Image (cartoon, rainbow, N blue to C red; front, side):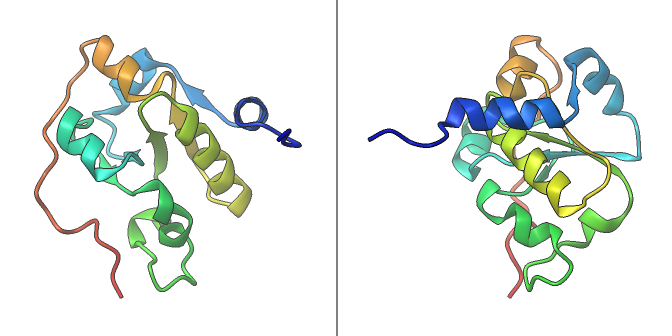
Length: 139
C-alpha cells in the first residue's frame, strides 16, 4: 500500500513550520518560570527512562483534548501564557504535536531538538517520574 503522505514527510512538513529549541537553550530554560516542559511520551517511557525535571506529563493521545478549554479533559496549565517546550523520545511525536497545537492556536509552543534521547545523551538533568495522579484526565 502506498500512502499519500508518509510519516517522514509529515514530520518534515511540521518541522518546517515549528520552532525547535536546541539542547543548550533548553537547558537554560529549565530555570525560567515562564517555561513549561511538556513530556508527551507514554507513561511507561517515563517510568523506564525518567523525565526532564519538573516537566508536565501530557500523553500524546490526550494532548489536543487537554489544551482545548472547550474539552471536558481541559487542563488549565495550557492557558497560563507560558512557553511550552514539548518533547518525546526522538522529536518525531513532539514535532507533530507541536504542529497540531500551533494549528489549534496555542501560543508559545515549540519542541526540543533531538527529544529526550538527545537530552539524556547530553547528560542533562533527569528526574524519576513522580507518582502523582495529577496527569490523569478529569471526567
